[in-house]
Length: 157
Image (tube, rainbow, N blue to C red; front, side, top):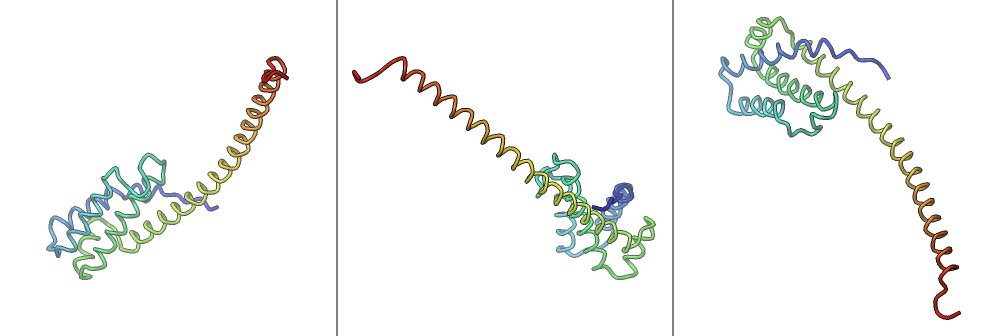
C-alpha cells in the first residue's frame, strides 16, 4: 500500500472554497450549474453523508471528493477564458484540482480496502471468541444440569 500525502490538498481546501464561492457569486451560471454547486456545498457541510463524518479520515474524504468533483464539473463547463480568469485569481489550475481529486479518491479507496480487510479479521476473531464463549456456556449449563439431576431425582425413579 503506497503512502499518499493528502496535506497539499487539505492546504488548498480554503482556496477551493473561495473559488467555488467566487464563481457562484460573480459568474452568471445556469440554474442547473447553481443547483450542482449548491448541492455540492450542501453535501460538504451536511452531517448526513454516504460515509459519516465521525469515521476518521474516510468521513472527511468523501466530502472533499464530492466538493472537488462538483468544482471540476463546473469549471469544465465554463468557457476557457472564464475558467482561466477564476483559476488565475487563486493561482490554481484545472490539472491541480483534478490531481487533488484523484489523490483523494485513491486514498479513500486504499483506506476503504484496509477497513474491509481489518473488519474481516475482526469478525473472524470475534466469531472464534463467541464460539468459545458459547461452548463454555453450554458446558457450564450442562454440568450444572447434570449436578442438579444427580442431587434432585424427579419422577420417583
